[in-house]
Image (cartoon, rainbow, N blue to C red; front, side, top):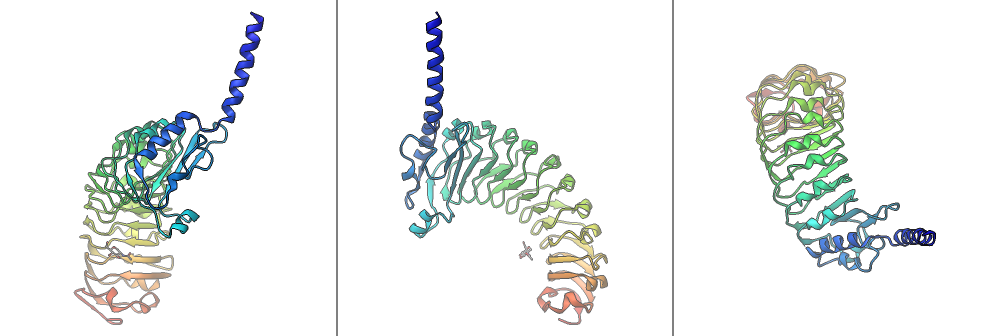
Length: 364
Ligand SMILES: *[C@@H]1O[C@H](CO)[C@@H](O)[C@H](O)[C@H]1NC(C)=O
């Protein structure tokens, strides 16, 4: 009895030692090999490095958690400064699909398969069962299908970048449960439907880029409750309704692009007097009313583009007291009257004011 107990202890110790020495468990290795099998990367040969048993060492783009020795990161970027790319003298190109075998890597924290141009599968729905995922970056491929409906399960996700793909369907309502999400980029896809109205639950979000889709509905007012939001881009969609006046009191917001939508109503006074806002593009909408006279020494716009709307009235005199307006475009509106003299206007040329009803004075 005593003796067999002793051997059992010895055996356990032996197993533990063997296990920690052997990085890359066979199950992780075979999941990676199944992932590789669905892909073809003919020019650089990055997958030629995926040989041998220790996937934690020397496998291009793979790294493991030093403690658990499980695969933690897959980081494959088609645009890279890696010598392998320099030698080939080209950026990456890859065809094939993202195998659901990825989902067997249950300690995965980073999944970057970006800028390979031609990976054309759907996003494996089972990815939402990987509790440690922090980064999903699949930008710049030909990924189609929908965003998994239960994406909101990924409570540790900080970056979701699916830009420049062919993803369709609507933005899943569960997305608002990603309470660690800081960076959301769904630009240049085929998404339709509306932006979830309870989007303010994404309280950590600092960048929300949804441009170049087919989104409809109005701009949720709750976006204005996301304190950290610095960069909001909803441009080139089919968004209707008015611009929430609450955007004017957002303290961190510095870039707001709402251009090329179907927005109507007036430009909120508070928006133009929000001195933190440095880039504002409202071009190509149906905005009307007069430009509010709220500019002043705190006004600092690197770009203010209000072109192609239905603005009427005159250019407010206070605009000439602005601290800085780098690029100003008021063209293609119904403005009238004289362009005020003053520094922000000195460096602008006539095109900034072209195609209005009856503007006059320099530079016209
Ligand atoms: C504003 O948006 C319009 C239309 O989408 C675009 O053509 C223009 O270049 C943008 N303006 C600036 C300053 O980026």
